[in-house]
Length: 292
Image 1 (cartoon, rainbow, N blue to C red):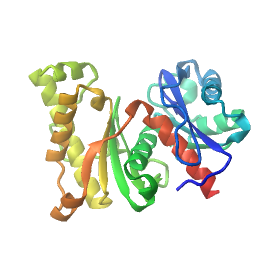
Image 2 (cartoon, helix red, strand yellow; image 1 turned 60 degrees about the horizontal axis):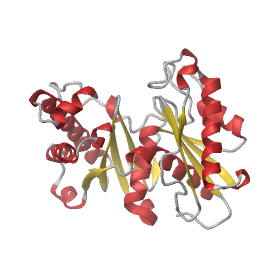
Image 3 (cartoon, one colour; image 1 turned 180 degrees about the vertical axis):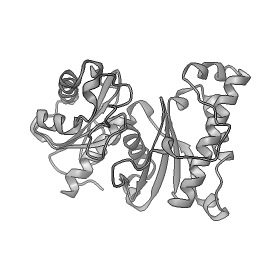
């Protein structure tokens, strides 16, 4: 997919507490193999947070020794909801907690501060894009996938022909906002995961119903996009291996497909979750470079 040349793309994953970054070269290598974090400062408002993004950009270049003039594009992801061009919703982004974020063009502000083209995705789409490219590599354009990312809310991403499907307003793939036929669905919180890992019956029931709900969402996706792969990501997969496998098996059990689909499709985990956002953002930036 990517062609050799004297350029790189940078990816920055912007979150409620920290930014993480990476550098991606034109032959498909990530030049940062550990977390490269700095405080995101998003609760202090846009001005300080945009500078924090610039600082993260400078940090990954310093780590890799790549000169700034080799950077052809930067990928940025943030929590949603936001438009396809990176304008945050009127209520601001999830976990940002500052009134000035409502309707703020975070992509445009970052691009103006850097003077380098910036491409935007929400964090779930970035993770979905990374998972897709890890799974299919050079054949990414020949396949499709759907990802459910379980965090503070339920995000998601739809990848077709190796690209994020954005939709008319940028809200495609927001799986957590899709009505599903689960009248008994319970809400869960991060604090109960530890109880579930230790076998607490009530906590396990909460997560069982969440896994069932994801299975129902995947069942709907099977009818709409018929993807090759269904990914599950987010905090729920950072749990103990026995819990993670139980959760994934429950998703599989409650995903309904036609027999022909079941023979071909797989349901698996998003890899390298803590780095998936930055790496997916870097892939999006590199794609922008080669398609220009």
